[in-house]
Image (cartoon, rainbow, N blue to C red; front, side):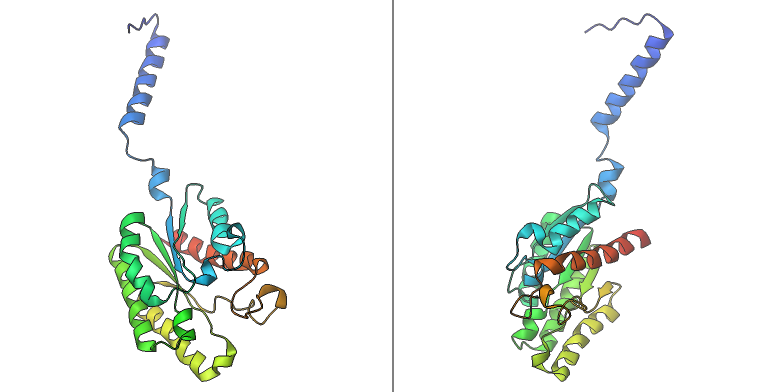
Length: 220
């Protein structure tokens, strides 16, 4: 194709167009793409839309919320109902390789406590998950959860020490008592099992996650 340049103005426009095409063809993904957070959620039924519509779950609401701040943010929810820390550490390496997240949200251990699994093993699994992520320069948000009061205050206190131990050992963002103000606060916020939040509680949880993730992103 022959391009006829009739004036200096035309020549300048042609040069600008060529430069624009060159940048479009040969640039790596845009800076916006490179800086957009890629967030992996590794959780159990608290994060897996248990007995509620998926679109009303906190991960779905959080996805909408984070994109109001980072339009190209990606959120990958790999949560499974019934998941334990053992299952989490087994699945995590493949998830990290495939998704290549910038941030990892760990919401696990509740089922370990409910099933009476050894606290030492739960702590080891969480340590291994956090360590694996940090070695790949992935920022970690560790979520702590409380167990039902019928298990006893002493058992609950020892269980909480698991999260505190991991959070104090590594440079992670720690969100303790994820269901604080939800569980045993308003009957409309908890399902009849007394363990899982209802759809009404999900915006509260989504906001808590958003606040912590935004803090992590702005402090980098």
